[in-house]
Image 1 (cartoon, rainbow, N blue to C red):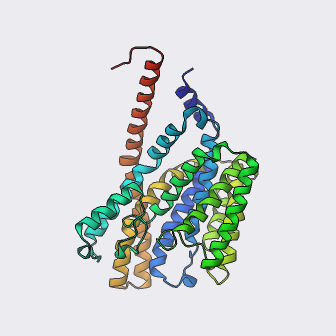
Image 2: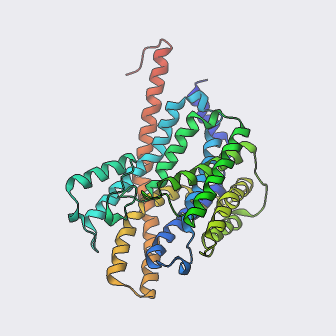
Image 3: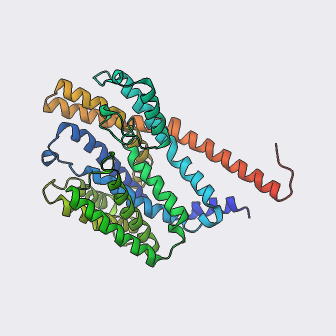
Length: 376
């Protein structure tokens, strides 16, 4: 049987963790709400979702589990180059979309912004670097983010690094060595939290290496959960585990963050992954979870263009609490709708086109290697 077809069949017959999809959606929504609240409440102690940024660490842990589950048993057969192609096809279309939307928001923000302060050359360079995920924190009006026109891309940069490390190192190593790497990275994460007082870094030039600590531990931990089969059978369901996840994001912001945040990342998130993988769903909630998982990445990668406009509006117009509540709720609904459109009209068609083109090339290559006349 053709190896491509064998791979496709094996992927179709593998168990799908719908609750983990649903949790991904909960985390994406939490980080979007956090970004709104970050503008509205500069004092984190008054922000009800002050730890929404930890959703990124949950993404990293979930990614380690999913990458191990999806590729551990087939990366040797498919090859490293094809693995990289599959990851680029999955991730990069939305990196591009987020960068384009971010550039448009920078140039045409109706509520402020100062693109005239930057030369055309600097804007083009920052945009190209954003497209290619090359860190370049040079735009002051974008908070000197690593990726000026789409701030959330900082986590995708580290996701790519983790994928490269997985392909060349992690998939080959034994579980004992993976455990050692996880422990070492846990120590590094605790040191970052102690030094900075929290785990909020990774998105800017001065906190660049904090991102390395955050991805390292969580990705290793997720992969370790999969390889160790640390899956906890339970009947909590999506509602129960989703509520437990959301509790981490509404945890109070205090002087003890350097202890509470590492505890959540080191132990609580891996526990939720194990619980999510061990729970089952039926009926309508399964569809909700699948949709939640599908919309999470488009929402995460496209929402920040609106956030900059919201921030400029908030600082210039100072809306009262009632207006602010209405604006944020309406914006969340519109952002989910916009993310759905981006997913359906852009992301899915582009990924399908690239995947079909890649599979067609592989089929032609195999027919040539087998001595057959290639089809035109």
